[in-house]
Length: 247
Image (cartoon, rainbow, N blue to C red):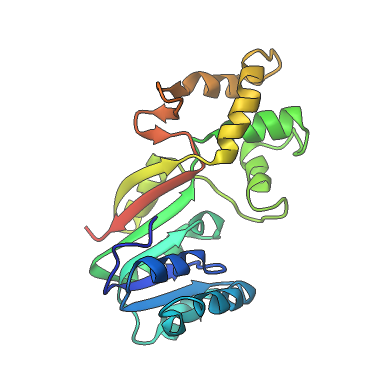
């Protein structure tokens, strides 16, 4: 989700963390307004220091979004955004519907939202977690169901919420709150590629691999460049990106 091509836009980075994407917007665009929102005071403190190292950084505003009922009030007059960036956030919240409804109320009529969520149809979830972490390394209890094991694999073993979505479920979720949803694409991590190269051949020959893992392996398609996908145009990677707009 690049930070370029947003000159003159009013931008909200919802779940800005330590400011990686805020810096991207400052370096590659000239936004009219740039607001970073997060639930972590520590992350926002780091982001505040980071943006000051870049042109326009002193104009970036930061707002606590831990309580959605207060978030819009804290925004004051800044309640219409042309672009809302939400990367790696929605899969960690208690109520994705509440978050999407809040973002919908902040989106300008012609605005758009880009979301990155964890991809359910990924090597990470369907091969790395059950075969490598649970079966081979025993780093995660093999008795755990896949969703619970996945949660422990992403953002630390104590991460309380870490969901995943496929294209159909994220589209259904977005449409349930009144958005039009377009799948932009998926991205595969270098970690997934390395894991597949190290363990893929082993798993193919492993009679103890679970039926689910074996089925996933058979579902993978590899093109002439070695790209791994579930279906045409859909890489089997951990990142799924969609764009939401008003109908």
